[in-house]
Image (tube, rainbow, N blue to C red):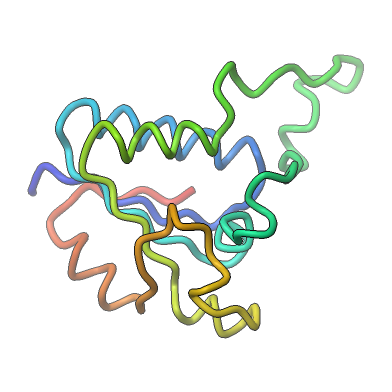
Length: 135
């Protein structure tokens, strides 16, 4: 196993985006290369025209308990966490070309934080031998 961390980011809700950004930043701070594949709703969250908007919370994160209000997702917004991760270390963000096609998007629609678009094979080649997590 190599030192890299590979993240398949499927969800586009604030709680999952924040978790993925935090994990990526932590790995980057430990000098671990990070490969992120954006699929479906995560890809939609990284669209240039939507990246700054509120993406809501997953249904199971809406409230810790029925009668408790939702608290803050953290002091640093998820987008800033991803930006910091890229400043700290080697973090590559790939837009899944299949998801782009399904959503009717082009790579040009993505925020500049996204490095490139490519297929699953490209991501798996970059992720080979690394630790892989799915969010």
